[in-house]
Image (cartoon, rainbow, N blue to C red; front, side, top):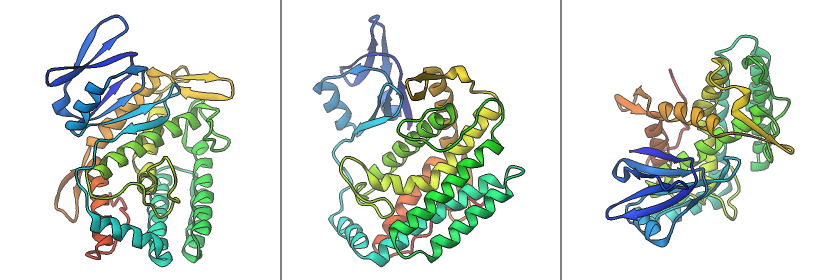
Length: 325
């Protein structure tokens, strides 16, 4: 199963047992729905209840992105894998401060491990590595979630500072800016993180986990905060190496970005370049040393969800994924 991306404006329509996109010129293109797991909509697309019902019946997720290419929301079909028992266990682990802190720290530990792993690939990053290691030590000694998030935030600030040592060409970053990103590197990071977030959300949907109950990020309104938790581990593992590759190999140029008033974002050309590498990365396989078979990066994310389930039902203590290759 794969992702399907819609960049053009138009209308999604249903015909018999499939759907197609009709652009503003009246040109039609069928979507191979049987081979598609998720649809990402970047263009301005109209759709009616007939299309929505069809997508939900077939368990297809649709993610919507705004004009700037940043995640806006999702169409999530009715949950097929529901477990009241697991839901209770998830809530128990949230309400118990000690058990919640263990999971929150695990996500931070996995994130920092992969940040350091990335930096070790590049020269002149030793100073940044030492600062991040100190924040990991501080995280180990922290007592509250807010202290832990402070350690993670400072570690990530140092990590992004190291981007200026890693990146070549005309790209640089003074500091991490999210709302809104004001330069190409910040725009690229935000877009990459959105793609990781929606990918994790898809994998959670295929399990019995509830995506709104989280441990590092506070559960809140209008967001799937467990996706934010798990994404912390995979942003530096999957998204950031793609950023380094695209910029350092001059696959992305400054004309792949657009600038508005106090706003910078990838244009369609830039998004397509990132997505091509992103999809290729998700399907890349490695030999899993415990399962003794090749698994894709996407499957690794799904396995991480199953590891959390085992932790909640007290079958196996959760340990965050750490790349060994």
